[in-house]
Amino acid sequence: MYLALILTIVIGLYAFDLWLSVLNYNHRHAPIPKEVNDVYDGESYQKWLEYSMANFKLGIISKTVQVTLLILLLLLRVFPWIDVVIGSLNLGFTMGTILFLLSYFLLSFLVGIPFSYYKQFVIEEKFGFNRTTKKTFFVDKIKAMMLTVVLGAPLIYLISIWYQQSGPLFILWVWLTGVSILFVVNATYTKIFVPLFNKLTPLEDGELRDLIVSFAKSIGYEVKKISVMNASKRSTKLNAFFSGFGKMKQVVLFDTLISKLTKDEVISVLAHEIGHAKHMDVLKNMVLSFLMLSMYSAVLWATLQMEAFSIAFGFTSAHFGFGLILFSILIAPVDRLLDIPITYLSRRAEYKADSFAAIHWNKESMISALKQLARSNFSNLTPHPLFVKMTYTHPPIFERIRAIGNIQEKTNAS
Image 1 (tube, rainbow, N blue to C red):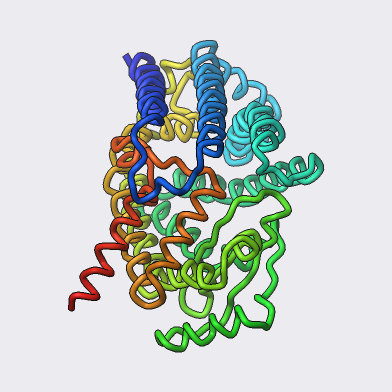
Image 2: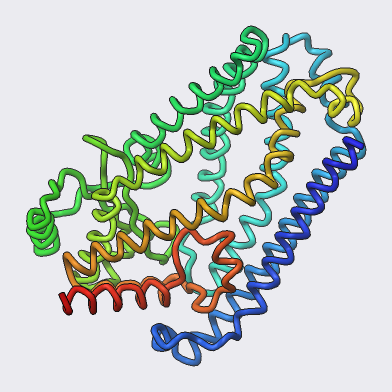
């Protein structure tokens, strides 16, 4: 029964994700909304369709391989075999658990590399987005792997300690550990983690910085840190983001964004990011994450107590490391359901940030910036509404532009 339950969840979610992807893919020929009918010309739109098809096919193949691998590992009882091999090393409970999970992580990581490589050096290269060298690609992968190990190993160590010594208080300690990690990562993301992969430099003096400083003063926002990231080292795509809070808050603009947008458009994007800061969206997201962590901690404790799950897959008793893997499977359906309200809240925050930029800076510049972002990043102009509700953290471009128009009309009428 337990084996059937786990396999049903794995296969069921795979089938649902596949159906949702196909639904969205088949919607690509839907009429383009009037708000964005000038984003692509005929040739560019055909190119986007080809890009969409290439990514769709690769995504299906990649997901199929990953799910097939997991099913084979479960059915062939590879996890108990790994545990026996590690147990023969006499490393103890905690180190044995770390090595057990590390083995699974490395296997999954290595399986994913060929798909990442193909996307970067075949698809992204073909459509003119790639600027990454093979050396940078593999160095990035090594850094990502090392970062996961450096951060993951201590986390597994702490969780295993709480599991052995805390009893039901395990839920509280895991929650507190998760809260601490989220707080530190959010506070130091731009200062510590981004520089591991990209170079950040202060926005240089000049007309653009003067305009930014002037605009920031006009809305009562103190500009302390506006950085430019060398995103062009890896891609031609455009973006910007806001992170941190308090004295740690910082706005980061991609160098590709600055090079392709007009100064008014850049300030519109910046105003959008400042809108997130004004609305305290980073803090709100953290609070939401803290609430979700409490549920995750409780589900994790319950999963680890279920000896029958481990026995069903070949273990002789409840296995802590395998319990963590099972937890990631059992929580997946809950995550899909939670995606609906969470992405809704995220999209609502984006509307508010757009509104802030349109009202406090310029409607036309905000709209033209959104169109340029869509054009340069090959955005989907006709995503399926259900796909949007399930996966989009940002509203579709045409809906954002329509909302900006309505906001400005209301502002003018008042």
